[in-house]
Image 1 (cartoon, rainbow, N blue to C red):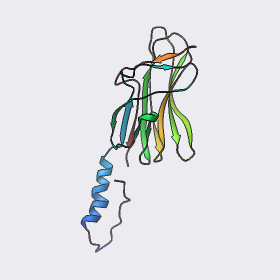
Image 2: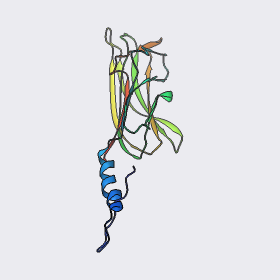
Image 3: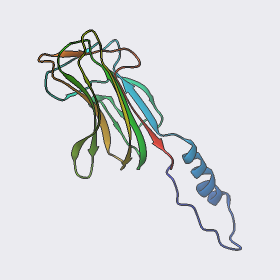
Length: 180
């Protein structure tokens, strides 16, 4: 049920069950119910090969939760905002150890009105011998219903490099609506 703008009551107005349900019960339910979703790449799917010097969308295959049943689109590896509002959006991923180049975790936001994808948040890491860089990022977006986010990674080690699956922690993409 959607949020209904609170009613301005007037003197001597008959308070009915229908009015209380719409303006009180339903709004309290809406405020209490958190709109949230989380997806990840499973161990069954295995590590994902990431090509050199190009954006690579992370292939997700597992729904951890989707509180509305309308957020997750695994076929396109994205989370769609079901209602307008401010959302926390976050992701994390881990590359295999490699001593060459730079790694980036990138969150892309698709504006459904402008029909454009915009890179809005990232975390980067330089390669360190013997270390598997773990990257994590989160931000808050003011979103329109129908807009969506997806996770991409980038690396320039001069060859393909694996994104490690460490289920259920890496890689992951999530959203949670803030307030009303």
